[in-house]
Amino acid sequence: MNLASDILKQCWFLAGPTAVGKSGIGVELARRINAEIVSLDSMSLYRGMDVGTAKPSPELRRIVPHHLIDVAEPYEEFSVAQYVDAAAAVSQQVVARGRVPLFVGGTGLYLRSLLRGVFEGPSGDPAIRKELEADAARVSPDELHARLQSVDPTSAARLHPNDVRRVIRALEVHAQTGLALSQFQRQVPRPPEHRSQNVFWLAPPRAWLHERINRRVEKMFAEGLLEEVGRLLAAPRTLSRTARQALGYQEAIDHLEGRFSLAETITRIQTRTRQFAKRQHTWFRHLEECQAVDITGNETAAELAERLLHLSTTRSNKC
Image 1: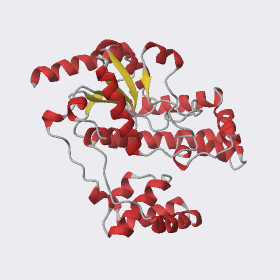
Image 2: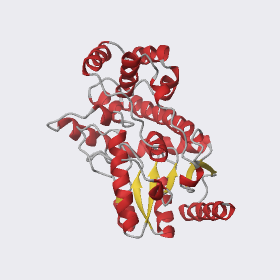
Image 3: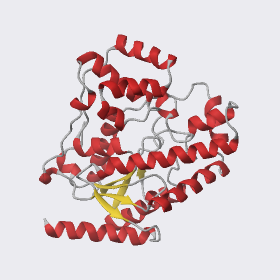
């Protein structure tokens, strides 16, 4: 089920690129608006994937209730539709308690799907998908992505070559219908009277963010990323394709299997994370419901929470 308009209008959304400090700011904001936090992160869903996904700390989670964290096993797939269903159910429960659902995270596809509803495309064709999955096993992700580029450049521009599952889905839709997936996915914003008026994303200086990303990756290794990945690999069931897309995990696996040195692995994750942050920026900038909030990087979490409150009040007074 999609978020009903009456629930959506009561929700707040705080998005932004990875490593910008959303978790701490979200808690400060939640304390000011009587909110419970709903994770807007596609990888924090997975149990046991803690260090690499930079989940909110236990301390933050004790201050304010958090939802949709640790709700799936790493071997499970978790679709956008499943997330939206779960988020809609949680939001209804939060509102029923007289509190505000505050979505905090950086997964642009989740944000768009909450704001505009889930795309209902043609049902999957097992035979076509099996053939495409066989192709994916034979060729590189870049080659598969190039095939998508030739038939659906809009979807190709949105999807990273390593997001093989969604690349396959886009190719499957084209093979089934002769139409680009992007033609089906032209979701439009809801009418203004049905929208949340509190959808913000944090826009930091690029150099500041890149330095934060580099330090975060180094911290993850110091906190045991390799040990975490080793435990996941030793589990009876392997990581799902979705879970393997989490930043840093495939690179850590490559290192543990001897393909890259530790220094090379750290650099690869830093580079991939910076590229991911750039794509996040594009997602948020292209959603007209989102209001960009420029930050310098020198503000405290409390100061930014106060600014968001002021922006909300200013917007409400204009309506």
